[in-house]
Image 1 (cartoon, rainbow, N blue to C red):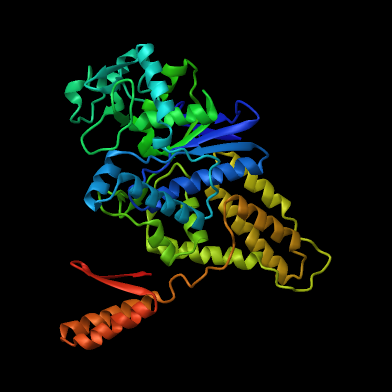
Image 2: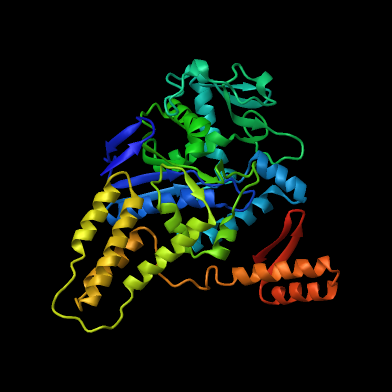
Length: 452
């Protein structure tokens, strides 16, 4: 098995350190709904874990929740609720979304607010070793003290620029990053040797990885947008604290999701949430859409691609069904397809090629059935390999898009009635749709709908 390591910039033989593969995946900052970009990352690493287990490895999977952060604090203040309440709400919604997508749960889900003692221990160790310093109640990592800073993102430290911020005047150098942030009025804070404050973002993942997986781990995963500065800073503070190199044996980063050519992000306001996607498409179709390209490649979201994925999954479901037809003594062998599947996945978890193998097997099953061959063993192989990719092959609970044209037609009719000031009839359409579980919202850009 060979995997692409971001640090080395090349594929390498997969040789884990011990009997259990240790895998840390960066989790979400819980201040808003999960979007399809999040799903892309967690489906990717779910498949990687499933495949490693399929190949006989034991895996210990840790994934964090960032449950204290500027974004959480700011959103909670706008909503007039405690940050912890906001965080807990979105932790619960995360699990609902990911369970719906058939994503296996990690073995441990540490939260930043519950790991403050370990974070403080690590920061104090960095101070003692001369890698960190205190300024105005905050603690910063001294980047110039760490050789080869920039090695993960392949950047020259002399050419890097700080992103700026209100704390710039407090730092010795622009690239130094916060390990501990001094408390501000009205914000959650914890006691520390340097006064009350809260963890910086980067330090939490190093502390959690160290606590739950050890000083050196096999796989660290996340999106490509985390390579710098988050993962760069993780390497820096982890190796500075432990003295153990490498901190991570294989850095795996998934590509980013795009919508109409732009990166999907909250700041751009072009998100498609997991909930919205699940209202329209089956979990298998969403997984198929994500796995249709190599995990390191960018992915473009569109309804046309998702509809094609839904159609494709139906083909696999039909091929996996037992039709009850009487078969001859001729048997369709599924083992050649299994071998091709393994060959594909062994090449840097090439799920896109592995999916193609599933469709080749489905076609072979359909042809063999027409010739009255025994396809029972091949069907079992199809179901097993589909399961490695997290496909359930279950029928969608409701037709994915069957009602959509009629809903759009009724919305158009309602708009015409409103233009004609036929308010009562327009309201009747809205009310009847509501009774059917379809909520309408009139926005400046037009009427939008969602299932309730």
